[in-house]
Length: 181
Image 1 (tube, one colour):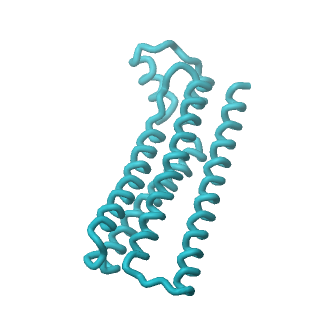
Image 2 (cartoon, helix red, strand yellow; image 1 turned 60 degrees about the horizontal axis):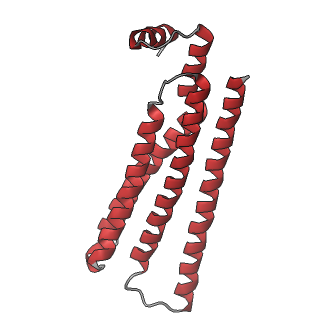
């Protein structure tokens, strides 16, 4: 969307008039490269999750697992995908309210909420996947070490994901400070 298109849409909405500089800032907030990276990451994660669930359900003898583990895995996968789709939709169409600062603050609040829900659904999916894979297995010492390594890997990946979210939120706050100057 170009500046002229944006101005026309804004004028037709009946909201207060904005100058060119403020409109350019609003467009730059909506098209921020950090926001684009978050959106891209969410799309890729959604596609990979759907593929993972499909592979696990078809290739790892899901019919031999208890029904409740299959249902739990599907519910965890769906919650993960729904969280990503809702987050993508929220980031794709930011509210163009009063001013650039307000838009950016709302976007940062939305991303903070998204980071928490994403972490929770990722942990739920990872835990359910580990449960699904480990059910009906007779554990000896080696298998317990392997399971422990898988749990540790999941926790490390969760920590790294949380760190990435924090960095992205911090960089968006820097954009907010630039816009408020």
